[in-house]
Figure 1 (cartoon, rainbow, N blue to C red):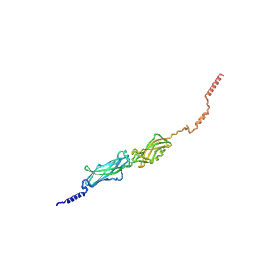
Figure 2 (cartoon, rainbow, N blue to C red):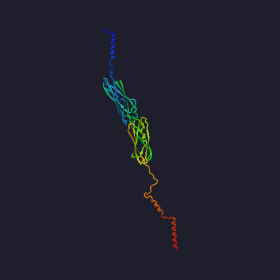
Figure 3 (cartoon, one colour):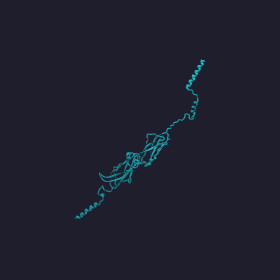
Figure 4 (spheres, rainbow, N blue to C red):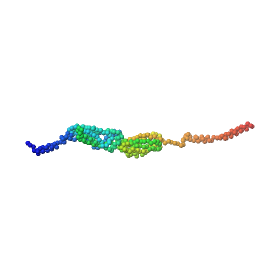
Length: 324
């Protein structure tokens, strides 16, 4: 039976229609059900790296890969932050997920130099991007990216440093001390309370110290912060004896409500007693000296001329008696 041209045309059109209706995964061994890259760690908000006062950083975030294919999935992984971060980080460079498998991998964070860590403001956030590149041989078949925000906590470390003057402190006077408010944290802080204690020297005071409350202090030596210095008046009352006094100056941080202090020693010189009228040699009988002086003045006194004249008259009388 001979086919007509119309029948042949209908056969070809039917065959093409059947091919076009085939599922996508039957067209290529690479295409098929998707694989998914996502966060296992809650990254809906900014993830804070753990960091302590010694600037030791520690942290870990976890991502997962779900593979719904019938074959193993091979990925190349890269990590990138959109800005400088005060910590180091690491994760696997390659990752394999078995067919119909779900596997996780971790990105860990660790410390870097202390001074560098303080240069990063906790007000900043840095975006981490993970890029997963599917490899089939040397060919890149598909790529997915995963993003999350990372930052560091606020670290507070506010304390005083005192510089003593060259001049001495005398009882009944005062001297001026220079104190620096040192902020060794990574965020601006303020003085919540200032106090001083004197050991065994109750006659010393530091008036006006309470006025330092609410003083703002930039980070010292980091983030272009300005140094903060204050002048403190140290007074000694007139009743203060000679003594080396120990003073402890304390500041309470508004940031972490912790009190930190510095201790220094200062010598106080007592007032010297100077009496222009020394006491009499015999205070029990103050009139003895005057009585002795008055009694001595009542005795007869013979001068040198009178004595010569008396001797002359005596010699003359003796001579006249011998002549007679």
